Image 1 (cartoon, rainbow, N blue to C red):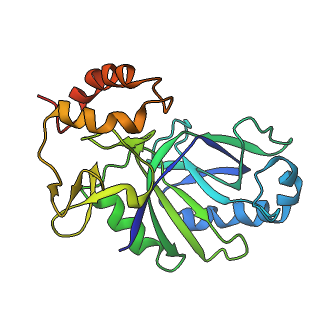
Image 2: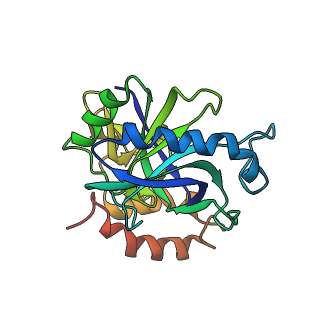
Length: 239
């Protein structure tokens, strides 16, 4: 199964929401779309738009009944809507949820293959899902094709060797079998091994040119001091 990892900043979804049983979402979720989709013009002025002026993203957002970004238990809530800025105001009769910044494991599927993707990924012991799963419809005019977004980390992930932000699939290193390694970046780790055997202090000196001169540290001394405090907390250097 092909998957990718993506970081997404905090965003909002404005749409129509209902609550129902986790045992039969196929019965109560489709009517939400039947109600919401024809009325999307009502929220067009407050949602995000693509470069060509169309709806930027359509989401089937999910939440627990307490709306604490937890997965469904016996019951759950579902919001059929469009992506919007966090400070957007939902018109009367519409619901707005704010989705926190998270790193996601993203998998493509269709309505027919939904269960074949959702089941194995949610039951995979090697995958830790930290919040509720969402559906994204990348082609608003094709409701049969969607992406499942499984949150695997609150906020952004960082390389546990050099501290580099891991925000997209190609940032990650690889294991010996060619699979993605979610601890280390592609600059530190590949084919199941570190590219260079070095001490923590040597790694810090390697990283300094990339993070000083205002990006984000003002100079090398400031960067070095900060990394000497932060790096011992990373997996590779923790004692």
